[in-house]
Image (cartoon, rainbow, N blue to C red; front, side):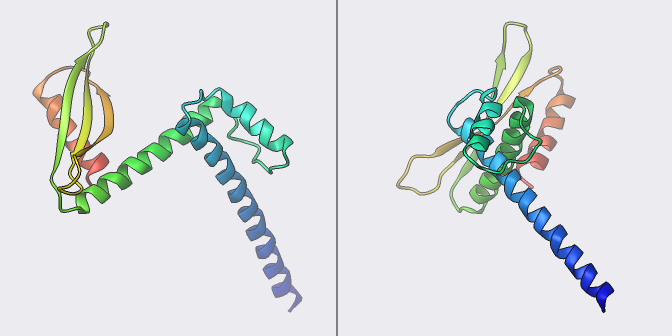
Length: 156
């Protein structure tokens, strides 16, 4: 009986530790999201988390660098874009994919991809920026591969 009680106690302790760590990680994600939404530089991430710790907020030990902030924001953006495209595909309105080719000073080509969607007849169409894709070359095989990338990344 005591072995079972000890196991249950250990499980509860582990659950509490995991819950605490998860709450702390959520606070770091919210901080990084705030920086991205407010157009603040990601180099402010470390100082922002230090300020929160001084104010008594329990923050996880890792994920304090600007690189971590960049990865967090990229993760959140990818999830939001995927969620938005799925919601748009479920709407009965018209949709279109707008692809614009751009060339920079280094003579490298890139594609700018937007999704235009009509939510209702009473409102103008919305445009959602999806991606900026640098092209290694401009062959038909590259463009065929991009179509598969579009399907897998945003529309599945």
